[in-house]
Length: 423
Image (cartoon, rainbow, N blue to C red; front, top):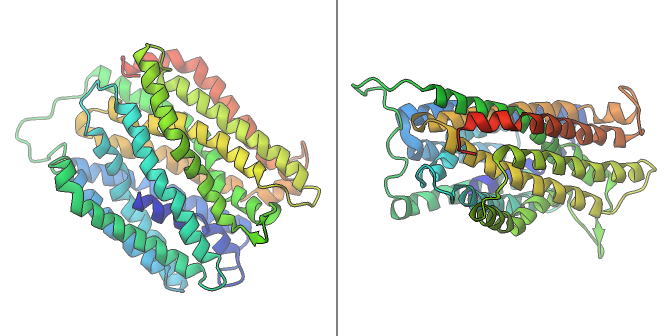
């Protein structure tokens, strides 16, 4: 919860800080979106290495501790008003997340034996905890950052405080609640007996992870517009006045976690009840629904953008409605994807495979940042014109996920065969 408080708290106002000429860097939207894409992408690439070290040397427990300390240090570097400390801070958060992110998810999987039907529901509840942090991070950190009294660097500092609290709580309660889970590496390099070679079935399950990771990119390259192009939409095109109070644009980043907290128990209960009746959708079909839902959310954004292209600030309900569809899609895909990796990955490579899963997020965020950097050129008709204005930009994210959904639906039987009953 606190790690996500730190990450989403700072992420909520990162691009707004970068483009601001009042205490920020005064960059263009394209420059800010590109850095945003690289930053959010790299925090999903480094878990590949953190997962490898956890499996072979550290164990998930030590890796999480190292990551937590490094992440906190990074946020406090960001709190110092200097370009040098800014880039040092981002680098430390990227490095620390590599040790933390894949291993905290793997540790949840370590709570369950293979075949336990509660796993998907448990990951949904875990996801609910994550989003409690993602809810309060933008409200607290974004509120401080956009406040005339405090400012950007107070927002960065508050994110660091959250990470320190998270580390303290973990150290305090780990032995009492988790015992020895995660203490030993899953695969010690000093083992005298040779490790058993992966079977054909193991490799096919790894192949299923790879296929679903590819379609994961369709979803997250669209979903991650929330922190960039949709953030600019909130800042510049949304009527944020409510009873004389102007809602800070970063606060819209909290809509998604609010809806996650509200609907996560519903989805967890839904999967459990459908499983009891033998009617739970398979993992590939849940992914198909996720892609359809994120596409519907951007259809709402296309309509809102069409109105705003006329030069008026539109109701915040356009953003809220789009984020609702995105959230429902996320609940069909993200916790299910985490659960899927822990079910399919060979036990001794669990953290490494979780790291490989997060590589798809790296590619997604990198692509999301590059696309968000094109928003002004597309809006001005320099690349193509279909509907005109910013509506053309959001139209990309209506079409691409639908194409992905259709393709995955076609391949779903093949993916199920590769999963060998762990779907």
